[in-house]
Length: 116
Length: 114
Image 1 (cartoon, each protein chain N blue to C red):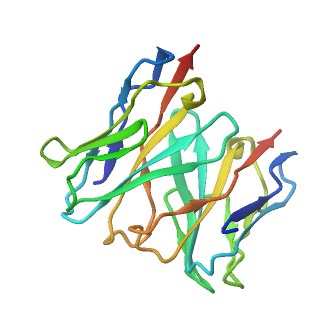
Image 2 (cartoon, helix red, strand yellow; image 1 turned 30 degrees about the vertical axis):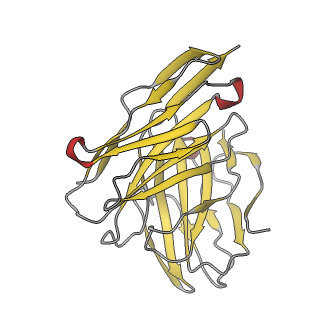
């Protein structure tokens, strides 16, 4: 069975703090894809990153970075020097090509509040 | 601009009154799907379509219908809405069903059934 667990339901930080959002996944497949989406208070889903299972290199994009570790089945997301605009719900998601539905399996999300 | 559009964005209706939420994409994507988002449950897939006239059930299809008569459109139909269908609905599309490709999401439709 495929599953994504985001154990942190809510996190609150003060601006400029670093924060890490945890994502643990379960899958039996060797080929799979991991995603992070951001959902700001306005409600839309914003794509942040896609990573395939063969690429364990960490990724950095500005203040955002992602740490993919197959050994622990984790795909964690770190925001450095957080800002109020980072306040949102963040979803981690999993997919694989064998799943005929082609859908994303989402975690339940982590609500991040960044206070000034 | 590449986008997925949904209408309406907000809808309040009463139990049993048939409604349709439209979804349209301008990227010539083959794959489209509908998700619902509920507090504490994340997003769950309702229906999906791999191409014109090809649709199938997702994880939570009960109470919903879809159709795919044109590649760009994928409406979600609630023939007899009930309060447990109060939710935030997202339409998504991608190049094909192999979700190695990014799924593009619409802006969401917030539905309240009283």
